[in-house]
Length: 413
Figure (cartoon, rainbow, N blue to C red):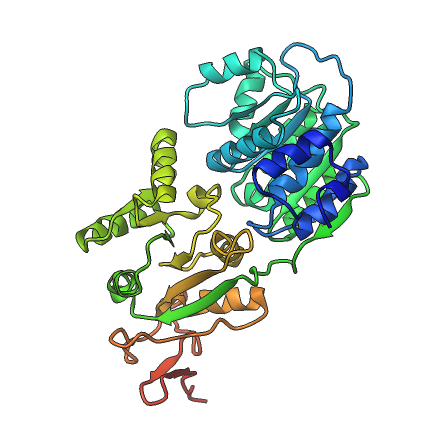
């Protein structure tokens, strides 16, 4: 299978050749012909599977093949993304693929001044990539007109719903023409996604590049049991002893990201934090420095990490497990992209054993565990009490130093 066999134009094939893209990925092979036919699509694809090209390429071809007289400030295609970083990266890809087509694209998102974006919109935009909140700001100021949108793309729709954007999405949909093509992409399927599908899509074609809510096969997953108070020491040991040069580390909170960054710097490891309290300019500069290798460890929260797209990121570390199991799939999807292999390591303390079990239930398989010598958990530590004051038997495992394995504790009957 080649891109040419999918029916793409010479201009798009030329742009792909310049980026050394020769063969389409599974999601591209399935999605591109369907989109070119004008059908609505519901696509389940993990990060790193080439889904951006899966909708950007046919979208560019469809718009370039149609003759349309646009009104002032009208856009022809709207791509909604959950974060600033993702919006910027999607627009960058759209511009690269469409460099030989007479179409203009732009990205608008919060965290930066709105006036330059107004200037770009006034000069005319065919394809607009936007975060929901900033898009509605422009609608309110009448600097963008959505009445002629031909194609709507919801990229990472599951994450937008997780972030509470459903009301904004519905407001945007009310501003669109009824007759349009809808493309919805998700990584994890939920009831909220199903409700949105029923509301938005018209007889959609389902495309699934991988099993729903599954991690990519190219990612090796591993759990290192460790006491909560020794996580940072273990992380520094792993980075130093194994020569990790580019590591993305996840924490649950902004404060935790800042604290861990300072601790790693104290250990002599170059690190930086990226989260919602950082300005957009700072986040962009930090990410670029990390990509170039100037920063060894990038510590991120879930929301800030959503737009991080690094083709060959080798290591992802869950310093703390996420509260939502689906977020685990999103996190480790940052590595093992574009046919590269990656490793996802989770540092798990006793208090997180239940969260680990929820993640394993979602994945439908256990994650291998390995104890690092010198960082063995203290088997005498009791599990955290539940809200009702009781403990939950079986919410943790006891380490047997002789077998180097964990076992379930016996529970009095």
